[in-house]
Length: 116
Length: 145
Image (cartoon, rainbow over all chains, first blue to last red; front, side, top):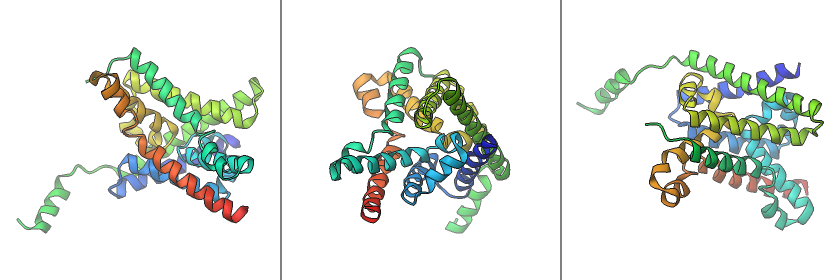
């Protein structure tokens, strides 16, 4: 049952993104930024927690999860250190994606050649 | 030729894309990505006894690694041209944008090429993600205490 939820949730999110891409002048860059911002907003209203409970991996695989992670770790940082925690804690969970993408892309860049 | 005629001509000459087919494929592929991620989460929590939050982060890393690898091997562009948003909205799109920028600017050298340009496409995600998360967190702090 959880697999069906995951399929439906991420499928519908991608479907919405494709509808936006096809019917407006937005580029993929616009849409991914929009989804990231949306993830943070949904985190603010406590909705993204429920989506993750509902869809599991289906909600965490989307780019909007990145925005939610940033929001969530900023709030956790605030609980620990107050205002300073907003600044120092904001990237704790999100750094997984940023550091991962930098490390992997650099190593693979050394191995592979660009195609023409 | 006035503006309206020109607009009509442009509309006529831009290739028409099959919107419903695109939307269907992105739904299907996006859903499959969700199922793969969920399967990896189930694997991680059952086989390696990870807590759920850690399993999500591991899955995020694995998905990013495969996004980078497929881009470096050159398969990803073909896949995206079929699946469209189904591969852009999952984290693979983020990985793809960094990896392709890094590969493209490799020939310009390590500092002025790779170093200066690797976040060229993914920079907007990071910038607006941090901005919106920060302001949402400020609002959350004010309202939830």
